[in-house]
Picture 1: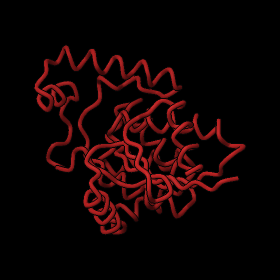
Picture 2 (picture 1 turned 180 degrees about the vertical axis):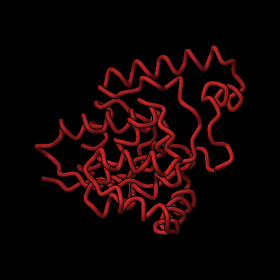
Picture 3 (picture 1 turned 45 degrees about the vertical axis):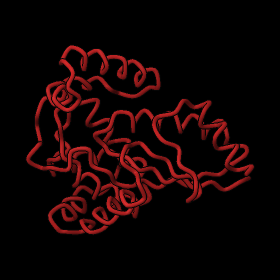
Amino acid sequence: MQPVRIDIISDIACPWCAIGYARLELAMQQLKAEMTFTVEWHAFELNPDPDGDGEPILQALSRKYGRSVEEMQQAQAQMQEIAEGLGLNFSSLQQRHTRNTFNAHRLVKWAAEQGKQTEMKKALFEAYFGYDAEISDPAVLVHWVKSIGLDGQAAQQVLASDQYVQAVREDEARWQQMGISSVPAFIINDQYLISGAQEPETLVKSLRNIVAS
């Protein structure tokens, strides 16, 4: 069995990041007889300005990409279809609002120390895309912490402190300095970059090629 390390740079507010990981899960399942996987999540903020919190998403995307709200609606509908085909809850994809995810990234770091980093990330994806949860709100974050069986009071204490603030800032800076400017990005064995939400078959082929190289 070949050990494979995967560092995933992503944002909780990035729909392709949720889709990309769901596809990676399918690829890892196909390769489970050949490889053992270690996954670690890293922070990236699509909306780093806390003042930009709460704008309806279609309006925000329309302004960002210089396209009409109707065009963005159509693009989001296609994305929603892909996500739901992977079993993801994207029912609020078009109703969601822009959110700052800095505190959510802090909790992902904290959850890693509890052995539940991936579960935390997936819960936050569902919170945001499935329920338009206000994932910049500490009380909302604590609810989703509890949903995966972690200690809500401990999470509250993390959010009320400056724990993991430096860790998230350093994480973001490190990957930006390495040239990561869009997400999802998958770094394989500290050497190889796979960009974007690739299809499971493409990921299987890429991972096999990397292991064989």
